[in-house]
Amino acid sequence: MNVRNCKKCGRLYNYITGINLCPACREELEDKFQEVKEYIYDHPDASIQQISEDCEVEIAQIKRWIREERLTFSDNSVIGIECEVCGALIKTGRFCDRCKSDIAKGLIDATRIPQKEEPVTSSSKSKGKDRMRFLDKH
Ligand SMILES: [Zn+2]
Ligand SMILES: [Zn+2]
Image 1 (tube, rainbow, N blue to C red):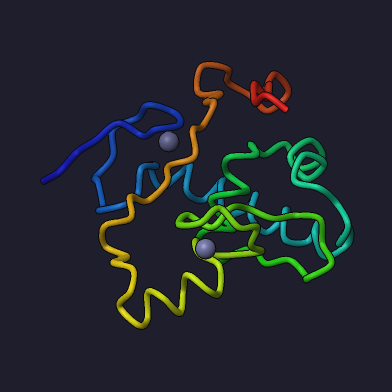
Image 2: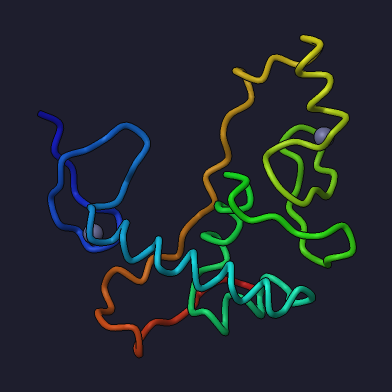
């Protein structure tokens, strides 16, 4: 059995490939995701930084959700992340439409593009939401 320390709280848990959090933290993150989703629904013009501050969630986490295509934004939203191939601004996922079609045509080998890990400025040492601080450089 593969046991690891949770990236967030440090507890041991049964590791499932690709998941770095223990079940409790995963659940907490899922609640946060719903909160963020509702926030974006209510504030379609909010920037990532605003979402991060109002929902108390790290910018890196928001970007991760965008890359996972769980969060999407309208075309006129100010929010965007970079295409991992060419750096163009995109609204969701990992690649822009042009690079996506190049990947589909086999012009770009997607398996050779390293998946970007957004650095998470972890708040693992501070317990409790009130003391949560965001160390991201803005
Ligand atoms: Zn945990
Ligand atoms: Zn691109």
